[in-house]
Image (cartoon, rainbow, N blue to C red):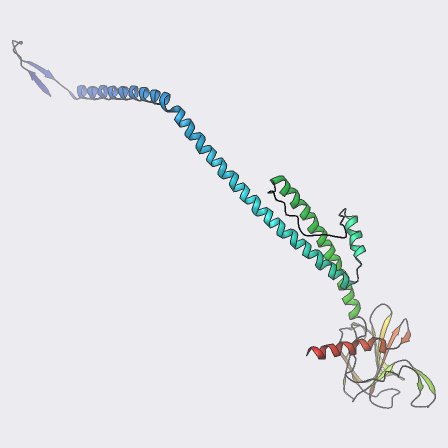
Amino acid sequence: MHVILVSDRLTTAKTLTITGRHVAMAIVMLSMLIIGLSSLFSYVTVRHAAEIRLPFLQDLLRAVSAEETQKSREFVRENLNAMAIKLGQMQAQVMRLDSIGERLAALAGVKPQELKGQDAARGVLFKDGRGGPLVSPTPLSADELRQALELLSSQVDMKSDTLSLLESRLLDERIRKSLLPTTLPVEAQWNASGFGWRSDPFTGEAAIHEGIDFVAEAGTPIKAAAAGVVINAEFHPQYGNMIEIDHGNDLITRYAHSSRVFVKAGALVKRGQMIAEVGSTGRSTGSHLHFEVRIRGVAQNPNRFLQQAQTNGAKLARLR
């Protein structure tokens, strides 16, 4: 680029030649000037503004920090209150479990002293009289809430052990009852006075009858009076087709004169399971079931057990 300068002071015109390098240098210098002026202006402005407005900014930051702190405290307090309410509900549930445990203990035949003795062994002591949960007029602190939760946790563990004990006792009682011959072996009436001394139906002489007789038609189902293990299922000259079931604790039931037998020695039978059919085999004058209960080999009066079966049957009939 050529620039021609013309002036009255100049005798002749002058020509300036501007190249791309000159233009680039001019642009760079202008940019540096602008950046320098901007930096100087910013420095002066910020310094004076900080001196003037710094107290205001500090007050604003303190206000924001105080507001956030207050919100955090309110949030924590709300959560603590909610946890305290939940803690009270759980304490009430533990008290209800305690009442249920006492009722179950009565059903299981466990004396309250036994449960208290167990609690004392675990280091948990209770007074005989207990009331409702304590409602404090002041909110619980975090440390108080932690201590209350630890106490509640130990109480829950103790109640769990107690209920487990009661469950075991009730299960044992249920098993024991299931092994007692308290179910009628035949749905028929029996001669309650047939146990003991009687006149022998064959000889007419006085003889001991070690069981009771259920008079029923041939083929009537015979059911196990209780759960147990079959220890004998064979023909006997006196008893005919006979079954003996061991119920544990030296208790055995005997079913005689059957027409057919459906179980074998070693079989595990349930209460009420069909094991044979009524017949008149062996030393018998007619179709009937001869039923015996023996403890340690000594014949017992089956009426002691079967009267319970009659009572249970009457209760079921009333419910129906």
